[in-house]
Length: 465
Image 1 (cartoon, rainbow, N blue to C red):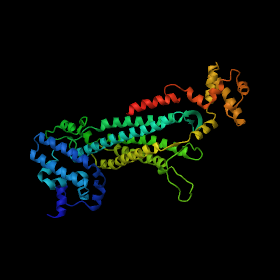
Image 2: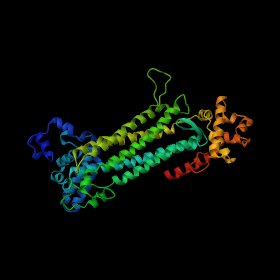
Image 3: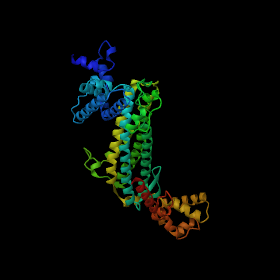
Image 4: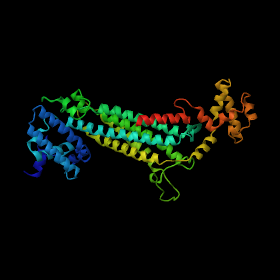
């Protein structure tokens, strides 16, 4: 038998056709170039399926032993880089099945009893993705721990807090970093939610309608450590909600990276000068020798658009599909794979980048002093003296305008001058007008006072332990 005949025979559907697939169509429809990363999930799912078939006496014990032996050899070949991936065999599933059949004969052909590539690929992607979600969850915890470490060291460091990118009120730099811990903790929670909906078994749905063989789907789910089976065969093979949901969670996580990256870029610029990033995360200029460019944060901002684009692509992919499986769904893998790779790479590099941040407290404090950051504190001071807040707001606005005209900070104004705006002001106002006093005054749950920052650090440490 010729090699072409062998390839044709290895295509499960080929007996119906009177002419071979054109090379152009082979290249257009093949997925083995990218879905071969599912090989381990494919073998794991196949072994669980084979064990169940034997337990249900659909295949014999000898067939099961042969399948297990063949899959062990295929695993060795793939891990050693000796496995030959063939474009003619379209995808990871047929490549592995063809090799198994060449190794163990008819037992390999019996493996596909009671299943279709439709429920097989849905199972493989779920098995692969749940492991990636677990890895991402671990990396998210590492990143949070890195941020908590830097936050604890900088609980007392005063940073100008911004709204509209204008100096608003002084905050602890540690408090600012803990805001990102909150964001990434929600990302971890979302990944946990996605995991639960991903970890369900489609296998046994076959092509779309189930199968006439007496399969024990719950047994396979238990063997694979899945939380249950997909309850509707049509939905089982055509559902890609879990991929969209994961990509949505990943896109939101990348948005958090993008926001942090934007701040790192600003803080590192000469106009701010609040921090420095380690040289290993930056590059120079090909023409300007003085430049130190924050390439990693800038690329993270850019890669966020890439992941958001994948989310839009997957949503668009699914929006017009009738039930059940359609070949369109082959296009789910590349955006999903790239989303996983991009998110994991970003997490790994930011874990190291955060730990290497050099903080410049003096520059932060100087910037806070330039922006009348304690104006709200003066208004609160007047309210405590009995003035309605709206009136206090007006009084302080006049005081700030006066100070701006003279190039002075509120805390630099003499007491008599301050009293000219409201006679209830006394010499205790200067503690209120100090950056440190403003910081310490916000000593309530969720506030920026260093004592609260340390309490939150302790909470996060316990949660992440």
